[in-house]
Amino acid sequence: MTRPGPPVRPTPDRPTPVRPTPDRLAPAAQAADPSAAAIPAPLPASDLSVPDTRAATFGLLIVFLGTLVVPFDSAVNVAFPDIVRSLALPIPDIQWVVIAYTLTYAALMLVFGRIGDLVGHRRIFLAGTACSTIGFVACGAAPGFATLLAGRVLQGVGAAMALSCGPALATLLFPESQRTRILAWYTMIFGIGGVLGSACGGPLVAEWGWPAVFWARAPISLAAFLLAWWLPRPAASASAARFDAIGAALLVCAVAALLLGLNQLRADTIKAVGLGVVCLGAAIGFVRWERQCSAPVIDLDLFRDRDFTLVNLAHIALNLAGFSVMLLVPFYLDRFGGLGPTEMGLVLTASNLGLMAASPLAGRLAGRVTPRALAVAGAAAMGIGQVAIAWAGGRQDLLFMIAGMAVQGAGLGLFQVAYFDIVTGALPRHDRGVAGSLVMMTRTVGVVTGATLLMLLFQSLRTGSGLPAGDAFLAGFGGTFALAAVLPAAVVIVGLACGWGRRG
Image 1 (cartoon, helix red, strand yellow):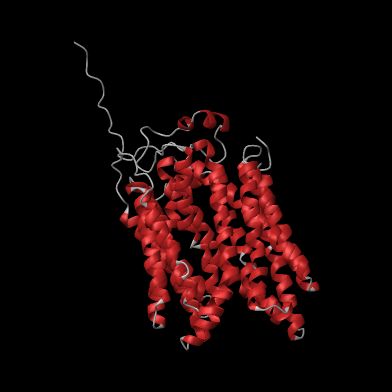
Image 2 (cartoon, rainbow, N blue to C red):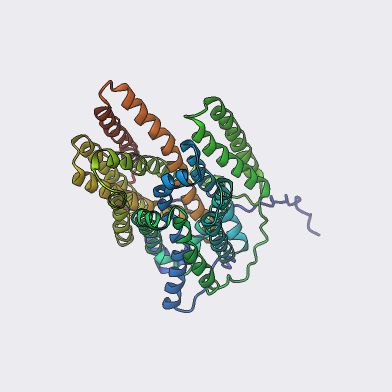
């Protein structure tokens, strides 16, 4: 009789995830067999199956329609003066129109992405387009400021749902070999929406007042909701993963405290510090909880990969620098451009036009260069555009400034497509909602951080110049753009040092 062996030690409940590191997959193997990328079978519930390319393309257009209303929100900036006058608001209070919306969708983005991975991206996208429609109607019909803010919160919830699951739906409609091309088209939608918002905001407000920037989007969002029922239902799932409610709550608290703290940095330092402490505490709690949770919101082990961490930080940095255009160029045009609201809006479309042009180009280049090399090229182009804007501002050369804005936008478009591809390639297909949400969240954190830090930098350079008012403005404008260009330059230097420029 054989002697019994030693007892078998039970393994932890949490399975060891198999994750390809960013940009280190074998592209040829993936193109030949998408399932070869260390992804467990069977395919998860979020994986969709469409009958043919025509049906997939129609589904992609539906996702684009539901996404388009989010970048169109740039039209709301044009409506700020009319909102202040119509609702008899103190000018500083207009910031809450931005905060109520941005804070909501930034804090909830990653949470909804995870929920979409668990219950199906189609369900969350449907809920998002419905919530956005209600939010637009609530804002457009708002009789007062409080109602307007409530509508903006609803709009933020809808945006978080649509953006968190939109990229997942778009990429899962097509074979994995077409992922980069689909992400390039998805990125282009943000350029199209930004162009439409900047170009249409002025005429809408001039003709019908500030509610028009909300009413105009309600039928678009409603159409996306109705059409989204056509999207194929997810396949049956064998996953028994549970939603990490504690981790989600800690994450929402950390992101909300961070963005509110940044907002209060100029107005109330003590409050900003207090919110910073709350953010730090919630972030530490989130990390500790996720380390021992069997089904975390996001697998933090991903950030042990140097390239993955760096590309996420780079995305925040580039969006911080890039927001200088929307923050400062409108004031420059108002003071030195001699343009009316409609012409000013058209000039502001230059960056988004550059993004629109570069995004499909990035999709075509994806098979020839690695995503990391494309990211370096995008950061370099963005830095050149920032320097060109700084130079043109000091010489009041509007045409050269428009060209610089287009180059800056093109560089950001190239980088964002590469970043999208790296992040979605690093996470398994069943975490595609988390991947898309991470991209959108880092973008928003960069923009909100830029809104505070760039304005502080501009004010410091302007007041510290000791020049007359007009010259002081130009000194602050040019100096802010020149210093902001340091961020994309740093991304290029660090990326090249890490080998991102290599073809293989």
